[in-house]
Structures are given as structure tokens and as C-alpha cells.
Length: 348
Image 1 (cartoon, one colour):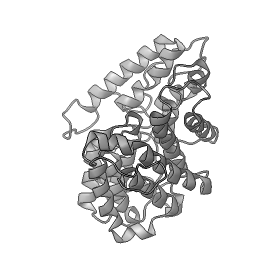
Image 2 (cartoon, helix red, strand yellow):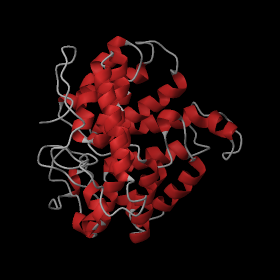
Image 3 (cartoon, helix red, strand yellow):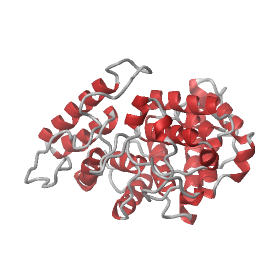
């Protein structure tokens, strides 16, 4: 277990960030939380210190595990972890944020704003809501805006269909996505080196782009360009957040050589840092296929299948360990160097 650190380390890529008391988690959860000396990690390295977690190390570990799951699009498991967290610690404000965000698959415009809004309202009613650190507060409030049906933002229609209806979701989507993005962008402007603000800036930009720029060519959508620019800045700064690596990869997943080619570094970096989840191991195949490096795409997909089989080998919710050699030090999906992309897909 890493030693607890001060709350003001939230969002930095300092390896001393508070991971809680990992040894108190279930055995398979401990495996999912594992970081290895070779630089790989089961679900990536997350830094997000909290006041509630400083008082309850097990709750902090659950929070970090939940954020890791969310960052890698493990949406179902994300719900399980955050549900466990708020049952254990009902005053854990960011637990309600996390559980609400498990419902938001923004890149595919899939969400449940009514349910999520109710969860966020519970978090806002807790005493700790007023004392969230500035970045956590901004990200929480951005999620409120994402799910607030009658928010008074310029792009919002004056009236929409019932929030439980498909038409209501469609009518309000652009204004809600823009509100989310605007609030995260404000936080990033004040805290430009915060990995969490940076990651959610990328996600917010991509979310708005799904509505405004679904069929535009390169250079015609400043939202996707903003997402890529932020991802590049974070990559150059050595950020380790799995959310940033993941969203950065998605920001380059377009059928234009000038875009996907510049994103191949993310196709290498993401699975070299996150070596257990099905989606994270598969996602690089998108860019390898676009680049015509089919051997690496095949390796990525094979690793993804193995990761999925391993995670579920003993039944969802009843794992005693992740099993197999996925998620262990030195494991990798395979190394295949090519003249087209002379970097290793995996660490040695």
C-alpha cells in the first residue's frame, strides 16, 4: 500500500498519491488495484486524494478502484464498486459522482440523466460537498450540469420532452454536453497541470463533438482538435492517468492519416500502462487497423479476449483473483516491431 498523502495532491501524477488500504479489499480487487515495478498496472495509476478517504482508507481504495474502472470503460463493474463505496461510506461525496458517471457513456451518447441527477443530488446534500477541493468540485458540478435537465445554458432549448423519453435526451444533449465541457474547461484553465481536469476536458470535448461534428473532416471540428491538443500536452508532460491515455486514444480514432498517425503513440502507451481490461487492450486495434499494421491489431484483440476471459473466469462478482498471467508483472500482449512503427507494443 502506498502511504496516504495530502489531499492537495489530487490529480497530480505523483506516485505517492493515496491508494487507501488496498489490503482490506477482496482478493480479486487487490489484483485489480495492483501496480507493478515494471511500470505496468492492472487498471492504470490513478491519483485522486479525498478527505473522506483520508479518514477511511478502505473507502479510499474503493474510490480509486471505481475511478480506475470508470476510466477504462468498465461501466458495469464501475457501478458495482461505487455502490459498494456509498453503502460503506454514505458521506463519501465523490462516490455519488462516480456512480452517476458510470451511467454516462458520452462518446456513444448513452446516458441516464434522471437516475444520475438523483445520485448527484444525494452527494450535494452531504456536508462534505461544500469542502471538496477546487478541481473535484468543478468536476462534480460539471456532472451535475451534464444531468440537469432544465439548466439555463445558451444552447438549451426552452422546452424539451420528458426527461425519461428518448426525444428528451436528444433535445437536451448538446446543451448538457456543452455545459459539462465548459465547467471542466474552466477548471483546467485554473489548474492546467491537473490530470483529472485534463482527462475530463478531453472527454467533454469528444462528447460535444459527437453532436456537433459527427461527420466533419480534419480541421473542421475544433472540439476534437482541442481534445487531441490537450492529450498531446499531457503525454509530453508524462501524465499516467488511464483516463487521459484512454480518452487521448479515442481523440485520434478517426479515418484520416494525419489524425490516426499522430495517435499511434497512445496505441503503444495505453496497453503498456493498463494490462488487464478488455476494452483497454482492444482499443489500440482501432488505430493499428487504420494504419494498416494488422499484426499489432490482431495482437491487441487477442490480448483483449484473454483479458475478458481472465476477468470473468470465476463468475462476475465472485472472483477470488483475476487469475492467469494477465495483470502480472512482465505480462504483455506480445512484441511485434515493424519498420512502419518501430516501437514495442509491450514493455520488456
